[in-house]
Image (cartoon, rainbow, N blue to C red; front, side, top):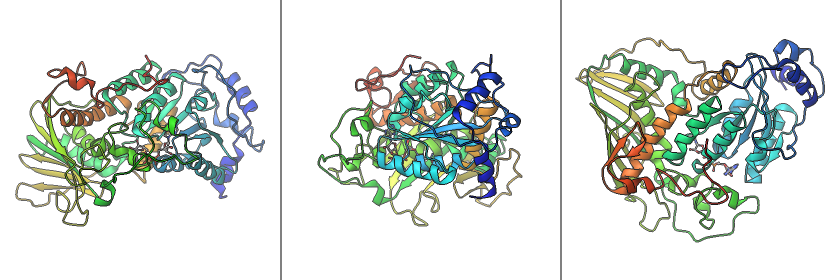
Length: 486
Ligand SMILES: NC(=O)c1ccc[n+]([C@@H]2O[C@H](COP(=O)([O-])OP(=O)(O)OC[C@H]3O[C@@H](n4cnc5c(N)ncnc54)[C@H](O)[C@@H]3O)[C@@H](O)[C@H]2O)c1
């Protein structure tokens, strides 16, 4: 244990002490964004050296139990819901930030949950509560915020319930499985005045921010075409053709399926692989599309209130994987979006990712702005400006400076700062609902095989009512689950 960890350990106080302190100090303090008060670091320091608190699964309480509010210098208590690949990565990043404590880890796979609990125990010297049902986590009054890293079909319900229970949320992208539940998530966050950060961490990455600022500066002149793309590795694209099998003993498969249609268990549809099935997610468009299309929308908008398309067409299919592959989302897809005075082409295909094989000079993903004076190209490795002859243009100095090291670290810090300052995050739920909707629209046009005319104000398909019965727009929730009224 290093010095910083020892100091943090000393600051841990017992639940009773915590409640006594916050009950006294936070009397009369509301949960709203404008709220203040709560436990101050100086007062917490007075409790140094007391026994470490062990979080227990709560006794049943009505949902919506009050949550202890967070204020400027307060410690932040988080719980992680969904601790598979990305969930453990988010947990590791957030638990290593100063002032953060982890009360509980939650997963319907007890194997994943035990791995996450061990990580927390190694860091803090005590085991968090291990809870299979996220609703029990939301009943923990001490928990200020939850990290939702479940599969896409399980983002909306825990996020909405967390907002209703007074928790802030760090939610994985894409925010939603479908457009309707995304809207409900925005409404819940606003109604309950919760801070929600969506993990589109490219928004907290310096060179992406610089590229967006340059595009917004107008120096490219009129931009009439943008492109964004992702090339998938062939090994990851193929799901195979399998038969139903017995779920592993450690997995509660009924709870994993949750609100989605019940389809018998197959390992090629479950952990990680759910991405490639419309029952749970949106394929590569819902996965990387949310990251790369987001950058185009940000560059082409004045601020985080994003410009939305009016007309969308999309085509593609299972053109790389065998036709009997279980995957239901396309491995090859092109979507063209028409905005008021420019178009975006989004491209997905499968191919070798080695240098020279990507869509643009070896880049297996990217966002490209084509203007009358030149181009801006950006991906996770950096960004460049070229003039109309293809010559490099010198990049201006950064104006909006991210926390260092930037990227996921800065994005997590932005969430914690926003929780303390009661302000919106860089990837606020409303803005990310817009980007996620744009991605769902490509899948809607693909599944419908026609043109979608979108009314962004009312969030309805103007020319094709039947399109609004398809999964990217809305779903029938499997009982007992339903999309809560907000
Ligand atoms: N922001 C990024 O860069 C990034 C990168 C990778 C993945 N992701 C996103 O993270 C999410 C998870 O992806 P992954 O690759 O970690 O998947 P995963 O399958 O490895 O992990 C998902 C976990 O959620 C658990 N889970 C399922 N239903 C649950 C429930 N009702 N309650 C609690 N736990 C439940 C699963 O058992 C599993 O452990 C996806 O939405 C994905 O798009 C984001």
